[in-house]
Image 1 (cartoon, one colour):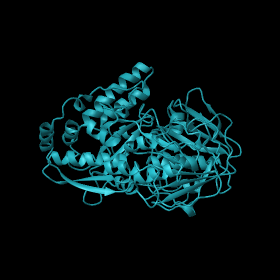
Image 2 (image 1 turned 135 degrees about the vertical axis):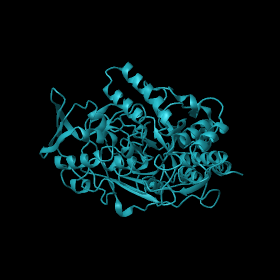
Image 3 (image 1 turned 45 degrees about the vertical axis):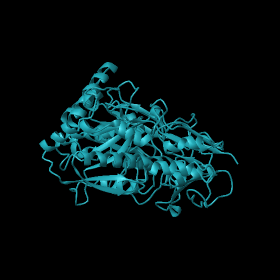
Image 4 (image 1 turned 90 degrees about the vertical axis):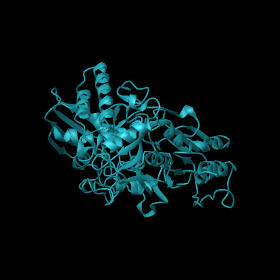
Amino acid sequence: MDRRTFIKAAAGVGVLSATGGVAAPAIAQRAGARVLRFVPQADLANFDPIWNTQYVVRNAAALVWDTLYGFDDKLQPRRQMVESEETSSDGLVWTFRLRPGLKFHDGERVLAKDVVASLARWQARDNMGLMTKEIQQELSPVDDRTFRWVLKKPYPKLLVALGKVGTPSCFMMPARIAATDPFKPIGEYIGSGPMRFVREEWVPGARAVFERFSDYVPRQEPQSWLSGGKRMLLDRIEWIVMADPGTASAALQNGEVDWWETPMADLVPVLKKNRNVMVDIADPLGNIGSFRMNHLHPPFNDVRARRAILTAMSQEDYMRAVVGDDDALWKPLPGFFTPGTSLYSEEGGEILKGPRRLDAAKRLLAESGYSGQPVTCVVAQDLPITKAQGEVTADLLRRLGMNVDFAAVDWGTNAARRAQKSPPGQGGWQMFHTWHAGAVCIDPSSYTAIRANGDKAWFGWPTSAKVESEITSWYAARSLDEEKAAIARLNKAAFEDVVYAPTGFFLAYQAWRKAVGGIVKGPLPFFWGVSKAA
């Protein structure tokens, strides 16, 4: 019996107890109905949303740290910590004023100097931040609530950069914390968001705890994704780590947890049969699976080796491994942008279409100079999405005649290791798997994974002058038609140089107890407005 069949059979027992079926953990019950127990997609092993670009870190950070602007459900940036902004007629001088009454969790006021320090740290790690830094003349506080940003040339998408969903999001920290080297993790977790992080109860690998910040002053506008009034109806949120899907399924059905962020697709039929459980698609914009290759070291420093992967890989194999047998949950993706959105293109994507060609892929590998060296595949085992993709890849590489060094790790270790540029065999790597939220992949503005600017690019550090040129063209576009043309050329260039290999487009479920209300669809779990009945 394979693992997927075993999990389905065990979960099918119905309401499972700690003494039968898959063992459900004994989770301490707290009095009152204002405590919500949440099973996140992965362990919160490293908690720095600027140094670490993992979605699980961004999701937790959205509770603790606030942003100057926040995307709403129409993907538009709205004021959040900012009360007002003024722009000079030439677009070079931006003056921002903070809302009154903003406080950090340690009781200190949020000041303009904190914002300036936070922006500087974010600029060092984010692609849009790097763009603003290159054209920045001055960024400085004017008074306690006002700061001024002077640019050398206009940057019309500045508010998009400050409010985007993509990682690293532009979170505001106290100046003393923001002074931390952006390439090293912070040691304090103090923000001004609606919840404070209870560090003394943090047990990596087991749980993280957040408590409502009584001095948080929400905006008056209706809440919408990362914007509007983030009104907390819960006093406490406990993130309970459950790497085993069967255990999480049992705990949700038993009422030991309230909300499961990423239920395994094979278990959804079982969950739907439970009258106390609700199941729905988490985000209609879906996700793009990613096979990320290291462009710095052999064999994938040679484009022919990267093209060999595109030539041989079957997106159907990857997607069925991720979502199971439900064809409504996935589709082939001969492109890099979110299907169904205005800029989606399949230009250059022919290499992913039609029958797979192993012989042609083997020839490309041989031409690249590959001759049996170990290929280190770093695969996180505690995330079903990465584990499933990694198993397909290991089989694919072996069928191509490659010597696979399969590094089975947890997601936290994956995050630390993928940042290493050292050669494989010395702590480095040749490939890893992840996924990108569709809300991030609608255009290049916050799509970090599509950038190909070498050392400044995302993990794998691809270099492609053609890709970067078309990103510049998109920013300069004056109409939607010009944007579409630039993205079509970008899509083709990204395939030619193989920035990364898209493994397909897929939808994912979320599941929660019917006693929980206020859950909305989106690219991350939004806890404001969520309630729990007694």
